[in-house]
Length: 244
Length: 124
Image 1 (tube, rainbow over the protein chains, first blue to last red):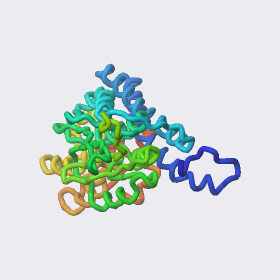
Image 2: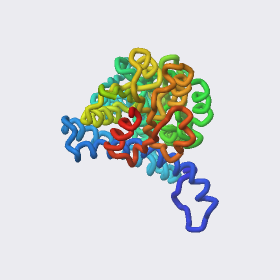
Image 3: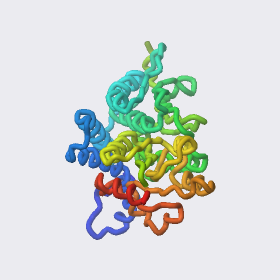
Image 4: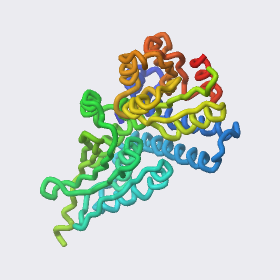
């Protein structure tokens, strides 16, 4: 992994320096959930919180979010091992699994997540775990920018005449300013940089998602809308269905 | 000030905002919440707060866009601002005081009492 601290030897200052931006961004990324957990725990400790059960639930869900990030970070550091097997899988099922797993967090935040229905079968070539993690990352990011009354939508569709599968996460919220969007587009998947327009899930999550996509010979991207954004991952389609 | 101060919290994390509101409420301070800068401008148009508690990295336009907007209106430019951020170490008070910022609170180290004390000091 670029910028990883793994394998840094004592005294190897050049590798350490190259890892610093990544470490700084990773630290920043973990700050937000940890600060929230701390504040909520202080509230419980002081006994000022009337809704003890609700706050305890918020602590659990926020901790799980931080843990997902640390798992993604350690997973991305092992991408070079090449142990990620690609297999034919149903992308629609991945979308449904992601929505199902994030449903408690969305519900607790008063938001809605849904999967667009799909009638024609699709088969993608991907690593199930990596693809799930990419989509979890996008959907987790979208959670914080979705308007209260509009759902986040996950969708899988074929592209390029059936050669590619695109999985998307669409959110509706305040538009990202153009200059920040241009910065995002320049950095997407190429570097771990904080994306100030979407601070809850900085560029680090996108960076990791980009690394995961590359490991599957895919790519990630984003589309800016007047009322939100779409983040997507393109992966190869399997030809197995056409053989049936 | 004899009446309860009214605080507008601009914070894109609902749960963090809820935490601030509980803390202020326990101290007898009224507060409301805006999830981003545009919602904050709408809320300020309706009721001018006595204090603004402002997160820095917001979705969409960030805190400084909002502060520039407030500075450009005579009646809003005097609203005391408390920045409440996880990046406090990069925002020394002397660098942001010109925006009407009275205090920079570090979300990672602050105690609930710090927010109450900062609000009370700002409205004195």
